[in-house]
Length: 450
Image (cartoon, rainbow, N blue to C red; front, side, top):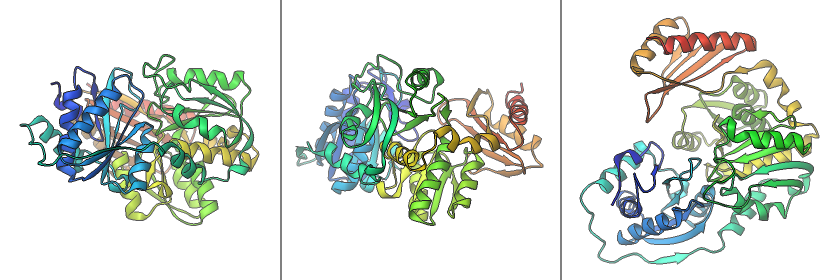
């Protein structure tokens, strides 16, 4: 058996297969998952990675050994597991996936009833402790097994029900599934919306032969950015490996930052649904705050991470939430993140407004100058944060998630990594691109001092 402590992350289980976790390890995680959650009914699906079928089978063996009934969802996107758990009233669920990581990784994203995430401070640590400890006894009566063969159709119906499909039409759109899980749900969606699609890498292939399924990295976006221009398309949409995140390219081939997209979607949803709270992560551009306020909503800035965002949405009954990293969450989707619904909403928005994406975000690009996330390896994380506190003592400081410092016309957040000796900087200036670059370099110099 292989199961190493490092696979138990803040938000999921993830590691190299089989060097850090193998099938026997997955079975122990499944058994511990039932013990920690007390679940009696569990839904399990898996992504397209070559290791995923056997890892899912082993995880389910552990669930059954714990006395819980398991329903196998088969090959599906992570958001389809969220949907299945909430719709079916399951006590818990798991997607066997390593998200956007390269093909040699495996893992599991685990949720409780209502698709509420199991996270480091609310369960994953305990699952890890039990899974790494002495063997848990098998239940006196093992659980049963069943299969849900109709999930895809129900999921697609639910997502399409959140937009007016009759309004979506006349757009030429490049779609890059990166051979990941978006290739499972896009074909039936495309049959029902009137776009001129240019499908790319929709065939699920766990080797990810064309490029890694992580569109946040520039090298993985190079294909779709060039393809949008080549095809003279109105838009490009790329998904990550397990398809719970989507990313947008405007008609000029430029990447649309996640915070600008959050602002755009917030405006669109508030216009349709009326005043409501919109949650966003504290790395985001002030464009989100300002757009939400202007649209009559209530902006609510919160800490980074899907587990925190989902809990916060429930606390304030938020209509929508967005993260810089491309996660978009919806109250009408059990407060969960999805890669399909934002894609559909953007298509609806573009068709309604009749203007290109570059024009829709032009005002954001002109006013809000953002650095994007910049990582720095530092030997002494607390020491670097201390230097920043002292250097920027005249700013408004907050320590909800790392250190945030605000001035009237610029601000930044620096967050430690959960797993590495890294500090992550996000900075914005309202003055100019040059001012942003100057401030960015100044803060980086303080971080990297010594």
